[in-house]
Image (cartoon, rainbow, N blue to C red; front, side):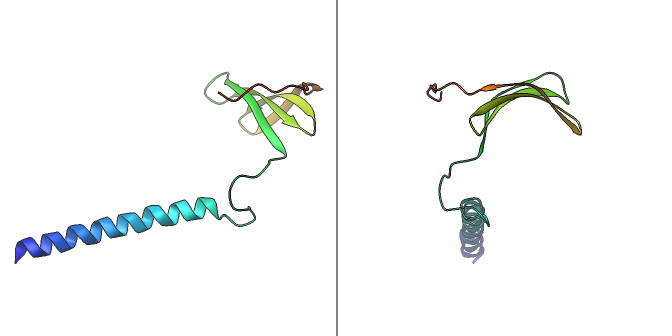
Length: 92
């Protein structure tokens, strides 16, 4: 009798865990305002390097231009701006 109860409890636990994982996966895939699957983004983060515990420097691309920005707690500053190169490196 106790073995049947434990088996039923284990099956229900696996079922609930599976439903939780499935719902989180569906939430990520079908977020409001986003198309199903991958979409092209207007802004790309090319690279980012941490400078300390609360700051980093990053290169972002927007509208055919690249911007070097400094990001710290509560502040974003543009350091430099340049044309984006016409070639692209393959993603690693």
